Length: 206
Ligand SMILES: N[C@@H](CCC(=O)N[C@@H](CS)C(=O)NCC(=O)O)C(=O)O
Image (cartoon, rainbow, N blue to C red; front, side, top):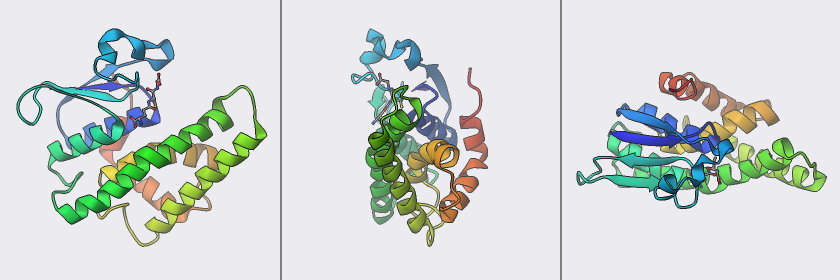
């Protein structure tokens, strides 16, 4: 059984979306980061940097239990286990997926989170930081929009590369910036938003 350590944040939704898309049975283990549950010693043994998402699979690839942190590693693991194209088998296609999966995990979300902090959540408003991260976010949205002008999804068919970017486009792109200037991104977002697995992933959980 797969246990997914989850909270309702961009990175949390990435992992839950991948779990839903994989079709594999899994159980959500909520970790309320507002209540600092991520610092519990038993959770730190799974995720040493006190971050969700994390995953424990009682039966990993060799049958022994496996623990994982970092959303990119979790998406890749679930995509591989799903064997349904979420993380393709073909080596060349994997390279295409990897570059956008890493962009989504290392660049897009990391910088979008800075926008979220300075422009939305911080009670102290720093105009230079807000202007900087708004510009950075708009530049990333434009980058992805240009790519999607002649690609239906980020790397061939719908893959974990798309999942690695969707939550921040959904949260900060749609809600905070608006996608009026990014028509290809709008088309991509709306197609993903309508997927049954995505509707389940963003819905209530036990
Ligand atoms: N690079 C990590 C970032 C994970 C991350 O930022 N997690 C946040 C929520 S989105 C968290 O758990 N924060 C709690 C903390 O840092 O104590 C990933 O992609 O999984």
